[in-house]
Length: 318
Image (cartoon, rainbow, N blue to C red; front, side, top):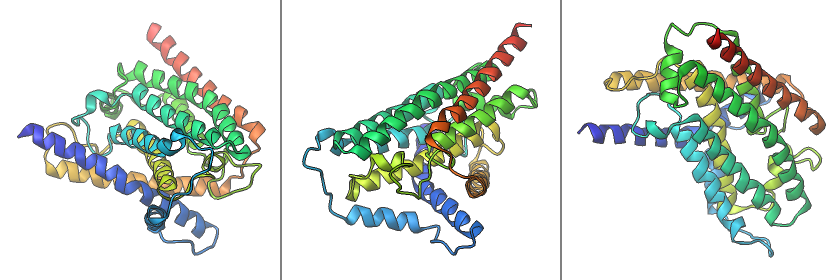
């Protein structure tokens, strides 16, 4: 009976991230529109867009290979698994043993790899430009992410997210400069990974500034729906990751009852609301930077992660 309940809670987690991802995207778009004194579309508009794309016919380029057709499903599957592994409202779930920060980083990197290949597979200039820019961003974002993982592992003694969340919620951790550096670095990496302002503008289609959109210009129908859904899941993943590691309060502990899980889910919804509001305010108040300045932005995240790791290593050695 206990195993059935554990599987049920894990299934609820997987369904929750799947259902809430478009809502978070719609919330950010709505808040940005209101901050710009526009009415904006409904927060449910991303759901309508996905349904509309799923009903449309797929148009394929003549020279597209099997990889072009399979990539959207591979990207969606890898991103969904990574998002479902992050503890949202409870720790100690059935798949806790696989909820490892390094594994999640690898899954996100795999999705990016297939997206870059698909962008180049069609043979268009826009796809090649977007893939090269994505590779440049990834070459700086992934090392910064790994340094953040090392910083958290030095504190928690593990890279499993349930253990990290439990340790971070304890009063023994307290306020540390290294954790502040890791938080800022993770936010910068999340902005770059999700192609948000100031790295990229998800609402633009200008050829000289596109990164993510340049790689998916040749997609249509259900293939584009899978990619857009994966992008929404990726945004939810990073917001959930920041909430799980740095705001772990409200998470239901293993063996707790239904009330604790309900309170944990309510706390998770509040964290998503705050995270979406902060992202909307930041994007409204920030201008997009030039592509040539992106390495400096991610280099700062890399240095913050490195300094935080070195600071923790030195403090543990003394």
